Length: 353
Image 1: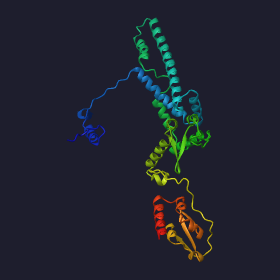
Image 2: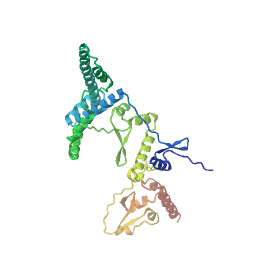
Image 3: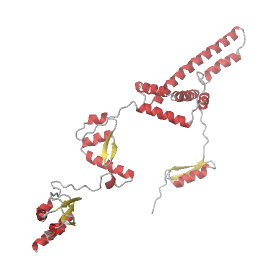
Image 4: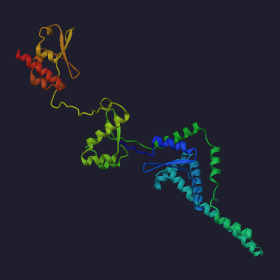
């Protein structure tokens, strides 16, 4: 028996939600059960303090946007943010204006309260009941404290009226980015993995390692962690293969990596020769052919050569004799195991004859 798992993110549930949303219903999935119910009408009420806080944030946001239209002011706020230990310059600017607006609102409320209180006391001294004056004095307390500056809507409307064109805005942003980048110097130091210290890695901004023909960024904390564990080679190999998979390119072809370990020919030498070509005619032979025939007659009127490890090597009678030695063949670099076995097999057969 198959069990169907109902997910809230499934395509069927999303389709049901779109269909029922039009008629005022909502679909919920709880413990793999689907419930259809009437959409609730939420009534969100805000307190006076919340209204004051929101309006101050809106006005601080508008003031910050005006400030950041000037590249010189951007540089100032970047320096101030670094000095005051803010993460961003915009956050530093908004915090400054928020506190400034709060002080202005409090001063303005105190001024209005003093004026209304003076009017109320004058009415009492005249012998009036002063009901209207008292109500106006009380209204100062119950209204949100947003008197210090213009409202956010007014500031936004004025800012959008003098807004520059899209092209001018892009040019200004490019100028700001250029001014920011030209103040830095990028110094690149290349070191071996076993030579660099953990402190140097952690103090650097970024670290990169080669991944075939490209550079690959590595997290410095992960680099230090796996090197302490003694697994840095496996870690880097895994990251290289992941990067190759993300790019959708053949691993062995583009990044110089392979899922199989490479075979290194330690202790072997490349086949070289001092023989120079001196005839117009040339003939290419294989190492298998040299095991059965010495080509002494052909060497008199043509050049004989063999290709090993993508290298063209011209031969003479002495070198042909060496290439029939089994130990000499085993020391040649560039021959695969299967090729060497087939050559040695032919060599054994020719000697028995």
